[in-house]
Image (cartoon, rainbow, N blue to C red):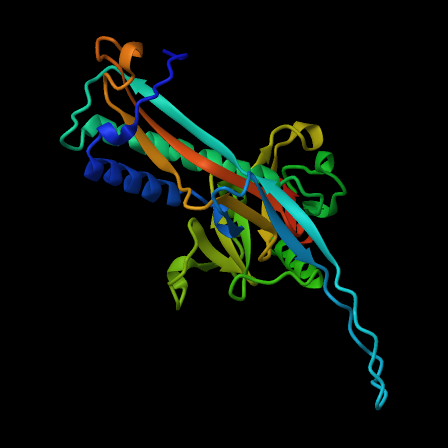
Length: 311
């Protein structure tokens, strides 16, 4: 079964049912896309290749020389650099020997779509996470100089968050509506919640436009929690686990996809594989993202904080 390629179109499934599954997949994925939501998005038109271009403009320095009456000053040279991101397809599927009911919403298929949505979201978010965590703009708690010096006692505090904010401000990183975003794991979030200045989401005056996973704010940073935050197991001092937090400014990284491309669910009923399923025994449910890519645009707009955490 692992080598079977189903070439039949999913049009065999009733249109309204297919649309329902597609919608269900998107809703399930959106609940889990944490790293994805902070990227600058660009659509790659169909028929324009597999590589998207992002252009980064270098800011001009301040002008401190006064104009001379009647004299046209020299123009300034525009400086820009190109960053490219290649779109690739991703997907996965699961096979089942139960018969799929083509006229209604099958309970088992619902569960499989749920599992596929979870895998799709994890896959997309891990791809984004690994790219943005690959930057060299790093800070280490406890005034340590490197990851292998971090101990379990070097916990994340609001002081490190304020340092990250300071670094982003000095690099002229824009905010997301007045706040930077920090993506944290449950371990580091547990330590941060001890800070008296921590404001829970339930205490917000304005509860609109809350990010997926947002749990609160602290010193100009919106804290977004995910169980998929990167942990460097055994890489700290004396084999300690080291947690990582990413603090982001706007336009730090870009996400591109083929125009009109979205995660879709593909349901293949038994028998749709033709001679590959001669007795109509095998059904499959899968997910696919036709074209997707991610690239760092402004590495200085992302600060990675590495720290220990409470057991």
